[in-house]
Image 1 (tube, rainbow, N blue to C red):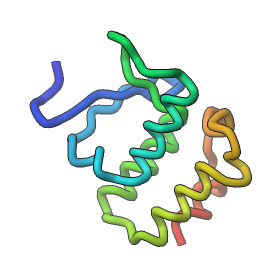
Image 2 (cartoon, helix red, strand yellow):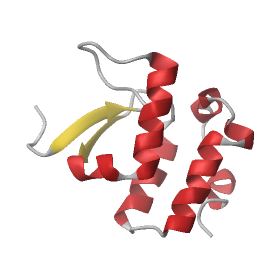
Image 3 (cartoon, rainbow, N blue to C red):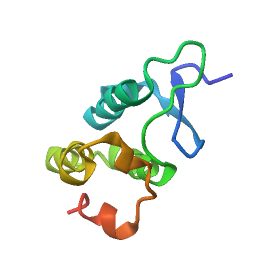
Length: 105
């Protein structure tokens, strides 16, 4: 069971996240949902899985919690959708601090 006002999702490395429904308004989370639909399709009765590892998801959550600026959010979205992340498969690779630092300027 999940606390009222929250939802559950999983990273590709099977880490469980319980997040407040408020996070569904975040652009980064919405983009990850779109990538999940492209990568895995819509879940039937199974769990919702995002195409990123737990480290990246924790980073996204930290940005939401500190209310990162729109510029930082745009940088993360570019990281997800452009260049190195032209397909969601690259999000399956473990993120390193060096990779994530490009999004925290």
